[in-house]
Length: 118
Image (cartoon, rainbow, N blue to C red):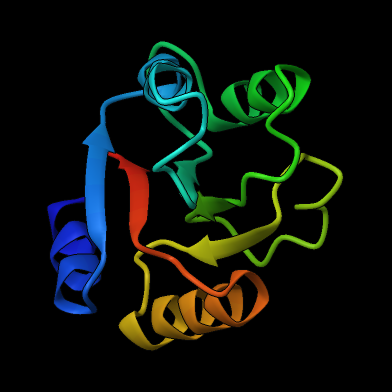
């Protein structure tokens, strides 16, 4: 996770790391979604996994907040059904992360901050 944070910061983004799905929800809620432009959500986390945290964020109204699922399993074709906008494999290849961020920036016009799981 620290490596991903360094990669993101090296690309000029701010990154906040949280330990689990509950903290991810709390972080998004603490800013009412402002200042959080993307969530990199690990699917397997303690306390609350990324699937449940994503489901809850969507239910709470964060339907336009981009959430990318992170998984060590094989390619996910069901990521949209699970509430994710996209997914990335673990470990995250820098080129893949950079490509996804550029695509998101092209869509939204900006991408200054990211939150991701510790």
